[in-house]
Length: 281
Image 1 (tube, rainbow, N blue to C red):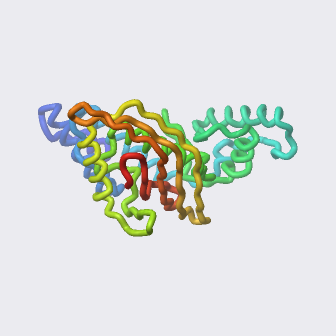
Image 2 (image 1 turned 90 degrees about the vertical axis):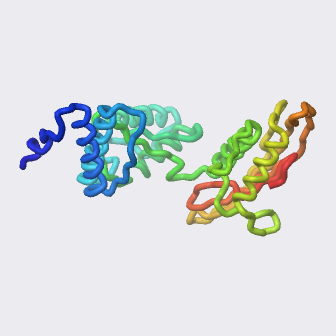
Image 3 (image 1 turned 90 degrees about the horizontal axis):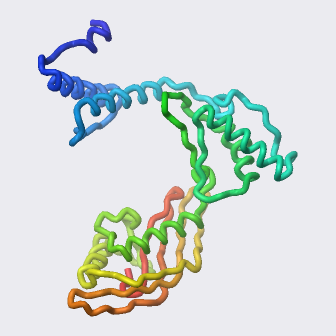
């Protein structure tokens, strides 16, 4: 049976049932040939699920057969000047030119913070151009690279995750499955603390004070130590104040210093422990 005949094979006179059967066959194909593990996509029309599954198969097939190329080769080896030979004004012009060439080929670099044009230009021409990958293109697809995957910005990561944690704390959004908390926690004395126990203390605190208000915090310092493998630890410190209102309407003001302890594994930061006004982790 040809591929065309297989695609046209009819299993049901009901068009919707036919489409559902085809979707199941596509899922089996993904599981058997590509190692995909797809659960049923709920609450969407079978037509949309069908297109989604076909696109996944097309993507996986393109990726499996893609040629390993450097980014420089994909960009068709554009001419460029080394950064040391350019002043700051020339760097900015050349950076715009290189980024335009990349955009034409649907390649984009994202930056967590705003680095100088020279830093960006050096990264593109001295590092990313040499980077090898399974490069392929599909209509509407853009390849994204993250600068911090090559050069982790630990100060930024600790700052941003501290801010996220404090905002989630004040909005009472920390649950048992809160992803910023590491699976293994250690208090300041070096004793292991059960993650579930730590999360339960937060939930009990929320139950005691269902509403927080008049909140303010300031991150004053960040410190960290990370080795060449991306393993390490860090802390953030600052001040935090907020009103905590009980069910009877009485409000207590909690204000003082906070400390958030972090652990780093392969350049990925998670919270290991914390102490804050009102609740010590």
